[in-house]
Image (cartoon, rainbow, N blue to C red; front, side, top):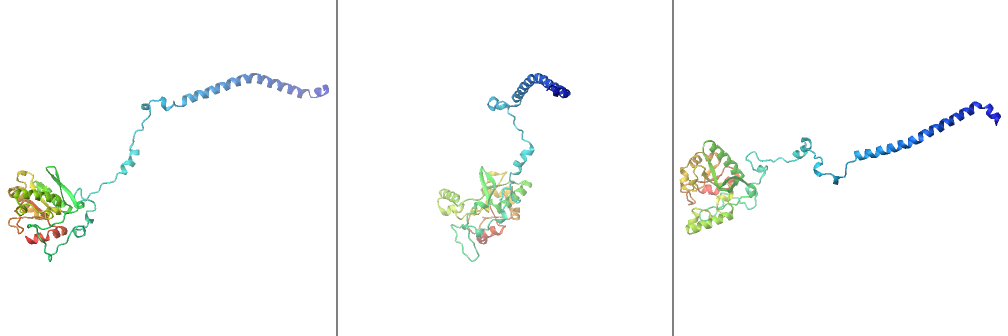
Length: 289
């Protein structure tokens, strides 16, 4: 053993020195390592406390951030709103105006030819009631909405606008009228005049009024409403303008003086006859005048 130590003295010294250094390092490092571990653990816990938000129930809802809308996130909502399309002829007219069926294709309509004798009722010709699909509102009379067939409505609005430029105010008193409404009106007229024959000189029996078609209307003078539905309407600027210009827009007087139907003269009652459909409806009535 002594011989070994003597022969390997340097190796033994190196081993002893390394052992002493390791013992000294362990004596210093272990206490400091424990303290370092405690400090690191404490730092992690503190960081979690700082970065973690409190539970929702511990916060006031008013303190929550509210996103502000921007043009970017509103744009999809705006682009999804459908564009409202109207006919270029008259605001409110359905876009498929030109595709609507003619009179002969609609239920309840009837064709009239020169070879068919049409029976009148107390001097009034029968007329079909127009489809609600074809009616367009053109104005109001004392809060009552008045409508016309889309063809007559287009022509009347044009005529009304042109008259307005010349200082004449054309107003619609009565436009389309259903058969049921005409029946109530005719019954009241019977009470006032004392009988059907007398009433028929002033009002048509139900099913026989031009107003059913949506192509006939009663016109007034917006500057002289006191003359509405009176013979004296012929003295107003509105009637005088109509007498000179109405035919240019496709309108004619339905019941002039001494008409063949025996209906009282009505200077306020006009009908539109310029379209093929309107001309077909009033063919017999016009030939009888």
